Length: 191
Image (cartoon, rainbow, N blue to C red; front, side):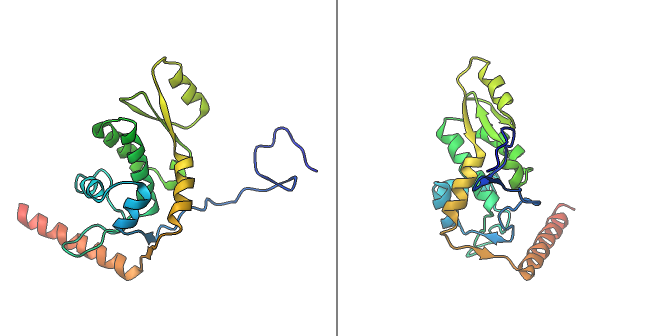
């Protein structure tokens, strides 16, 4: 049996298991419709719609394009929706949540899986180590944390039982052409 007090990785039947060479995250070509996003994130349609219209959390796979079109949210989008919901539940203002989400938006899914969000009730801090969390606790203020890896694990389990849609290359090209056409119309209007 293998025993190494310094070994930090996973062990199976007493034998250390090598971690994967590449991060295996959620499929970026899979999207989830609004009802799924709402149910999995624990929010109402009105909240989701408001957050999309105010650009707090927008669907990165497919946005609304007029009447009858279906927005599609990625795994990361729904993860951010769950984070926003948890922050709201703890009493953080939507204005401060917006600041936090702006930082989260630039991170990849694997980066999000490595952080803990900590707040003193007004400001949201991104912590990547136990020491950073301890420093915030040392300030003497009331602090609470949201462990993003836990939310991600919960989401991975929950979302697997919901229907998803795979995005094909034809749709991606169509979306790019639509965005180009929209940009052209806007530039004609302003000139």
